Length: 142
Image 1 (cartoon, rainbow, N blue to C red):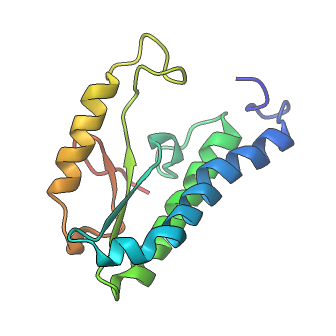
Image 2: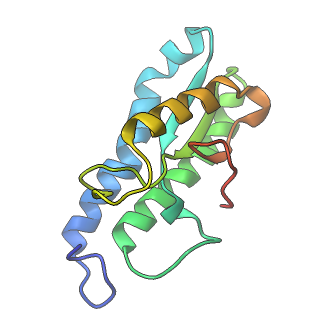
C-alpha cells in the first residue's frame, strides 16, 4: 500500500490509522465498560494483528504495524486497570483473512476466523486477561 514504506510514509494516513486502530478501540472500551462490568462474561476482545508483534517485526507497513502495536499496549494497560472490576480484555490476530485487506489468496475465510475467535474467547477466563492470541488459540509474542 502507498504511504506505508520507509521513505514514502504518508503521515496524514498514519494519523488516520492511529485514530482507527488505537483510539477507536480504546474509546469503545471506555464507552461500554459499565455494560461489560454488568454482563455475565465481563470480556472485551480487541482485533489486532500479528504484524503488531515486536518480536516478529519485519519492515514496512509502519502506520499499520505501529497503530496495532499501540492498541496492544493499551489492551495490556487496560487489563491491569480493569481487573479490579472483574473485566478481562484480550487482543486477537484474526489470521490472514480473505477480505479486501487480506486479498483473495489469504489462507482463512471470514467464517473460519470468526468461529475460531468465538471458540477461543469462550474458553478464556479472568486469569487470561491481557493475552495476545491467534484466532486458533495460539499465543503471539508481544
